[in-house]
Amino acid sequence: MLRSSSLALALFAWPTLAAADVLPDAERPHDWEPRDPPRPAPPPEKELPALALWLAALTAAALVAGTRARLQERPR
Amino acid sequence: MTSPRVIADRFEVVTSGRSLKSLWWERSRNDRPYGEDDLWTLAVDRRTGARVRVLEPPSGSFWLWTASMWAEAVARHVIATAVPHTLPILHVGDGVVFAEPPPAVPRPRLQPAQAAACALAACEVVARLHAIGCGGEYGRAADGRPAYDLPTPLDFGWHNLRMTRESGEWKIAWLVPGHLALADLDDTPQDADPDALARDLQDRLDGSLLDEPQSELPPKHDPHRDPIARDLARLAGFYLSLAPPARGQPAAVDAVRRLAAGEPVVRDVAGLARLLVELGPAGDWDARLAALPIACALPPPVLDWDRVIAAGEARLPDLVPRQRPYVVLPLAVAYHRRASLRAALAPDDALRDVDRAVELDPVAPHHVTRAVLLDRLGRRDEARAAIAAAFAAPEYTGASTVDDDGFGLLDAPVVVVGDRERARAHATRGTIALRDGDLALAEHDLRRAVDLDPDTAHLHALAAALYARGDLTGAAALEARAVELEPASTRYRWDLVVSLHRLGRRDEALFHARKLEAMEAGDPNGRARRIRLLGGA
Image (tube, rainbow over all chains, first blue to last red; front, side, top):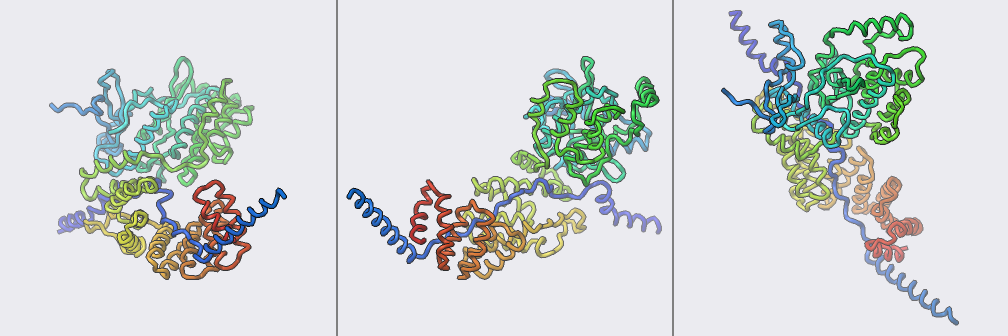
C-alpha cells in the first residue's frame, strides 16, 4: 500500500520535478527585441482652407505687381 | 562500424564533449575525475591532420539555443574583424571549431611592464567585443557556480583567458567565445610551482609585496553591476593577478587596484588601457590606443538575423512540444527584430516576418507591429483586426496562458508591456481610428498614448485628432509643444502654422511661417507651401 502510494505520488510529481530539476524557463531574449519597433504613420498633412488659398494667391499677385511697378519707376 | 561524425566536411570528430552535469554525476558515483579533454569535442582537421577542439552545446540542449546563436555570432565577429590575441577559429556553424589551444596554465608572476602588456592585449579584445554588445562575464549563481543559461560568451578565468610563453615573452591566447564549462576547472587546486611559492614568500618577508590575500583578486562577480564596469574590474583584476601590487609603485597601480575593487575610476576599456600604458613597456601604443573602439554603455547585441531565423526554422521540426518554447520564443523575437529593420524600405517583407512572429508567439507587441505595417500598406480592415487582437492579448486582458499539456509548466511567460509599448499600441489604434473618422476613439487613444509616452509623434497625432474635432486651440497648444521638442521638423511647424492661421493669430503664424521658409530654402516641395505661407501671412 505504502509502495503504491509512493509510486503514485512520484508519478504525479514527475512533471514538476522534471521541469524544476534542470531546465531554466523558456524566455524571450530581451536584448533581441527591437529598440525602435515600427510606429504608426503620421496623420495626413493639413491644408489651408480654400478661401485662405484664394486670398494668398491674390496677395501674392498684388505683391508681384507692386514690385514690378516700382522697378519700372526706378530709371526715371 | 559507424562512420565518424564530420563537421563541415572537414573536421572528423574523435570524441564528443560531455556535459558537466554528466561528469559530476560520474565523479560522485564512480569517483572518476575529469579534465579539460572531457569537456571538448575533439576532432582532426582532414586538410592538415591537426588536432582541433570544437565548442558545441551538449547534444539535445534545446534550452541553450539562444546562447548558441549568440556565441556563434561572436565567433563570426572574431573572424571577420580579426580580433587580435584570440585563439584562431577555423569554422563556425554546428559549433565553433578552434585551433588547438596552448595548455591552460595558472597565472604566472610577471614584472609590471610584462603584466601590463598582457592586460593591454586583453583590453584590445574586450573593447572590440563591447562594440558589438558582448560584455559582462557569465553570471554566477549564489553559490558561485556559473549560471550556464546566460548568453554572454566571455570568461576571464585561466582556462579561457589563457597565457602562453613565446620566445621568453608571455602572451595571451583568449578563447572567444569562451567555453563556459571550463570555468569549472578554474577552481581546481593546481600543483604550485615551488620556485614561485618561494619567491612569493621571500617578497612578502622583504616587505616589497603587500600582504593582500590573493582570493580578493580578481573581484567577486556581481551580476547587478553594469556589464562594462564588471569587465573593467575583471581586466584590472587580471593585471593584478599577474603583478600583485607592491610598495613604491606608480599611482596608476593604485588606480588599477581601485578599479578592481569596483570604483568607477574609468568609464571604458580605452580608459583602462591608457592607465596600463603608463605601466607597460615602451613602445608605439598611440596607434593601438587610437584603434580601440569606445563604448561606455553596452550596445544591443549585433546578430545576423537572417542566419538566426534560418537556424531556428531548421531546428523547429526536431523539437517535441515541451521543447519548442526554447526556440519558438526567441525565434519570434528575431522575426520581430528583422521586421522592424525592414519596415521602412521593404514593408511587404516586414509584414511577412511579423506574420510569422505572430504565428509563433501571438503577443501584443507583435500584433501591434502587424497593425502598423498593414495600416501603412493601406490594408485598413486587416489593420483594425490586428490592433484589436493586440488589445485582446493576455498582456492587456490579464488572462492566463496555459500550455497544451495542461500542466502550464512550460507555458510562455506573459510579456511585461512597458509604458512605451503601451503607448505604441494606443497610438496605433488612435491613428487608425483617426483615418477612419472615429474621432472620439482617436482622441481617447491618442490622449492615452501621450499620457504614457509624451513624445513628439504622439503629441502631433493627438493635435491632429483635436484639430479634426474642431478644437483648434488645443491642437495649436500640442503642436507648439511638438515644435518646441523637435524644432527641426518642418511637418510639425507647418501644422502649427495652419492652426494659428485658422485661429486668427496671424503674428504667431507669420513667425513660424518665416522659420519654415528658411528651413525649406531650396526644397522644391516647399515652394508651393512657401507661396501659400506668404499669402496666408
